Length: 178
Image 1: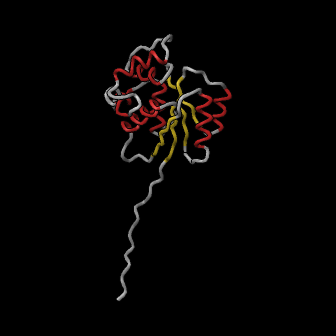
Image 2: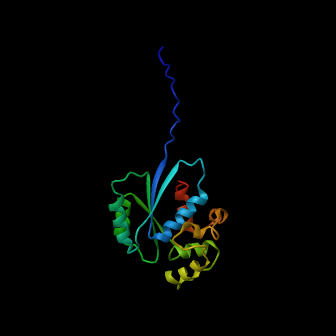
Image 3: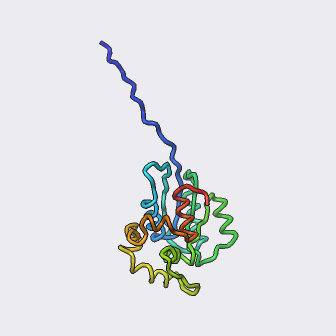
């Protein structure tokens, strides 16, 4: 007797939006991963790849990201940089040519943006190191671990944030155009 072949219905594959977010360093990567963990929804069709560079000048970060991810296919690409070192027009053009949208942490750096998110004043004269010295002791773990940001930046704080750079990253993670 012939065996009856039953056809199995394959689950319908939902198309995922893939995008790349490249942070300037390990602390950028950790915070963006934390933000993604807090804000993602189970029904999301967004699959971000959150990477880091090893710091350096904005030009080096753009060059390295362009070279490393040139052959990889992403729907959208972002580079998140500190604003303490100004970008040249040539660097901005190169990022755009490679398909990257630039997001600059402000004021000054990631830590400045996060302190502002906590409604703390960030003075114009404060350096990136001074801002790090203000924020890092308050974190729950080492600043390169996503869990470090959980206590100070739960979902409600991230959703209510008005700092422009935090809003830009939040919008990128939610696949919204800002």
